Length: 130
Image (tube, rainbow, N blue to C red; front, side, top):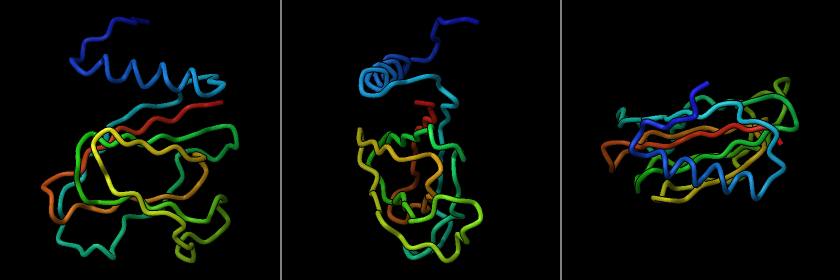
């Protein structure tokens, strides 16, 4: 395993990981990925398919907003696969703002929306076990 970072953004990521380690009982990092969504002609009422990042209770998800944009993240009141996602109620809607992050249980259904006013929406998604 090579612990040497190559990306010019490694300092930002390393800082976020340090905060996660300080603020939680971090056991392991399951996944870190970037998501880019573009305008697709839909309205602000449309959202992408609700999903879970992980099904186990001891996992948390963190969404970090790279830049200001529209294209909210929606959190729903569903936590179990056997609950119908299409019947879920929105419990929170978070607008992307550069440097903002949200943390929630990985098993909570959530969704992104595509930007309308901006030409892109970029987030970093962290999934970690605590």
